[in-house]
Length: 91
Image (tube, rainbow, N blue to C red; front, top):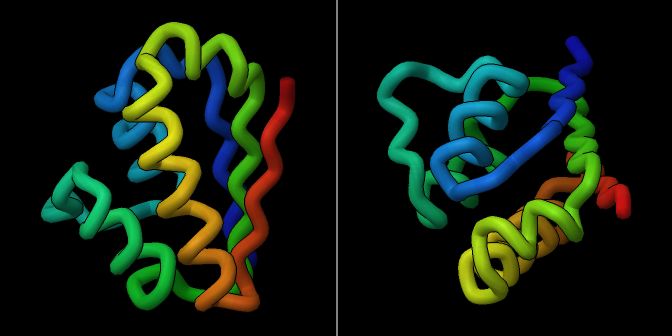
């Protein structure tokens, strides 16, 4: 089963984790932190998954550089470990 997660109007890390958990159908026990994010993307999701992050520059401006860079770094690290995971950033 293929999963597609559309992240839209992300203004905070809370928004990011809520939308991601819903889009990828993560369990209610998902930890909403970088370690849980990496674990979910490299082991918990089943089948190919694509994450589309629309308006990522606006999200960066809202959530701050450090939080955004930490999330992006984790997303790309996970995609390097999971060949079935694709990340797309929209400006």
